[in-house]
Image (cartoon, rainbow, N blue to C red; front, side, top):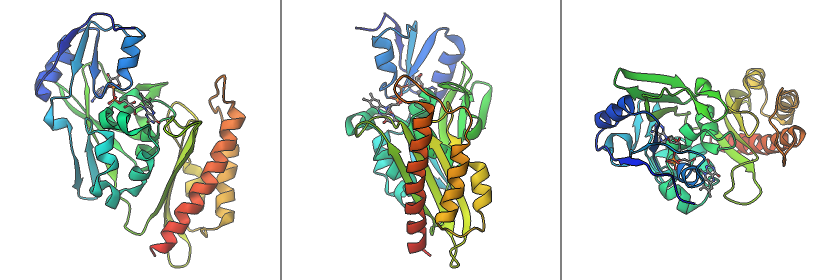
Length: 290
Ligand SMILES: Cc1cc2nc3c(=O)[nH]c(=O)nc-3n(C[C@H](O)[C@H](O)[C@H](O)COP(=O)(O)OP(=O)(O)OC[C@H]3O[C@@H](n4cnc5c(N)ncnc54)[C@H](O)[C@@H]3O)c2cc1C
């Protein structure tokens, strides 16, 4: 199928784009088009206007600012996947992008597009939550920041007003001695995860956990950060007993989503298996860096 007719707009500055989203009704922004184009072609969406933000230089780039990485919304997934700056400061992201789709999709797909599309099984909101990402958005009225923890308002719906455009994300950089792991289970390589997990840990020379972050995707509309388990594990030995404590929180997760292919019990089982493996890998990598 082909999309229903629409007017095409291609602003070359952020101000021009913000003017358009402030004045137009029934529009869609197009970034990499990897999720939007199929929805237009199937006529799930029939906007009167499509605003292409590919020509806005302010929205592109990866930089290090104090203890954070900043990634512009229109930065291609392939650019982030292969960025030495990202690999050095947030190897979790590099590892996660190895599981995101295929090279062809990552060449066009953008980080911002993924966070605005907000598929519950996507790796990108998951690692953003794990790294305490803060999302920057703008309208003609000014800028606003939203913590990733508050970004999802409901299923596939970000906290983005109709007159706002996402600008980028700031992500915490973990200490150089941290361990990390992103693991997932999907039907085929490059598919969205059925369940995925992002794990980060800092371990001291006594094998005690000093800092930890564990986040699941494919469980709920928003990434699920296991805050209770993280709290219990601080000052705990980085051992199999620690991993078992995380399993208990996963076992007791309420309202795990299900669909015609994957039951809640199956997703819970995958979450435990993947988290078990990811934590052990993160512990191992952290120990090697003490
Ligand atoms: C075959 C295939 C396999 C895939 N597998 C995976 C996978 O395994 N993991 C994964 O995470 N993703 C996967 N994807 C999705 C891919 O990551 C998309 O690139 C992503 O979901 C959307 O990014 P985009 O830049 O293409 O956005 P678009 O499709 O252009 O836009 C997506 C949505 O975000 C809105 N939007 C985009 N940018 C902004 C902005 N700056 N401000 C406000 N609104 C904005 C658009 O209006 C639209 O509603 C797959 C896609 C395909 C086609």
